[in-house]
Image (cartoon, rainbow, N blue to C red; front, side):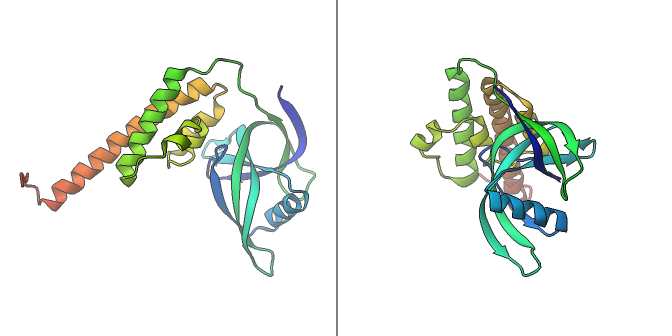
Length: 207
């Protein structure tokens, strides 16, 4: 069942975080120094919300602070965060020294996992990783990965990532990431062929 939390710290940014994704952040504004300081003290979460050209998106991703990489005397810091769970902003709250809101943590709808969708997503992801890195993902690790875990390791556009975050069905997310992985493979293949043509000075080489 979805849960409501008041006074949840919010960090509007020009990015989209996904559950399980590692997100490095540089904290320098006073209000966010205060916010992150309180999160560190309470070991609590805060929410990253995409501040798009169309405004603040209603669905964001809660994050936990996994490591403080360094901290300056004036309070500026570099931290590593990890996405945990999606939420929806119910109402903004302006009485705290940093952005905050009343948020509803979102559950997926009850459904049976589609094994075909999972298999297709794993295959498309493995093919993309191998194409990009010349290394096939470890099969045991791959079997533990859902849509979020796979998507968190690929640099998609913000609209695509927000689309994943908005979906409340793992089957729907698996089908979406399969399309995204296949499209990325095609773009990578096109770029590789373009580079090969450039290296050949426009001539097709057979040896």
